[in-house]
Length: 145
DNA sequence: GCCAACGTTGGC
DNA sequence: GCCAACGTTGGC
Image (cartoon, rainbow, N blue to C red; front, side, top):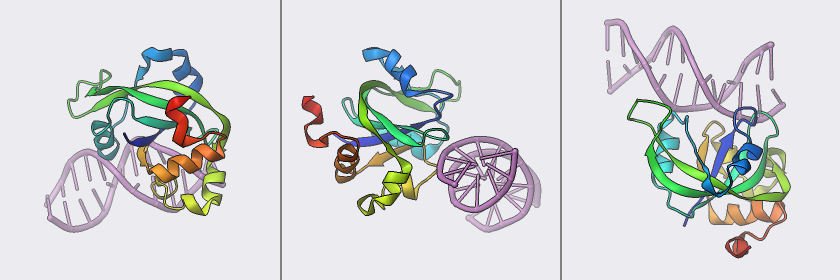
């Protein structure tokens, strides 16, 4: 069980659109970056991820779950690219902004801060709990909600 | 809309 | 295998 963060520009694919897909979830297509792809390849069913709005919003808006393992990206014939599927789990009661993350010394090493351009990134367990706490959730009991 | 950071491509 | 050119991401 690992934690992740997925970035999306809300005018391309928003949290509302993701939620509209319900438990069926949706393919996280369009990733054309090896690092991001490699992270997706290591994901397991049930892994949880923050859903982050980049460009506009600049905040963690919800929590999603990996519900299909990495498989060829259907939006390209280029066999180098594959991706997982994710489904929305729940909203963050309170959105956690990039500003909030940067202002928290505990999150100074978070990829969101240190690897600004990486669109799929790992989140450490203590970072997960901290961001959940800031968002009004107890990350430790999240699976029981 | 600008531009810095950084990943990718392609010539050599 | 280097590195300059180029393209893209994403914060501001």
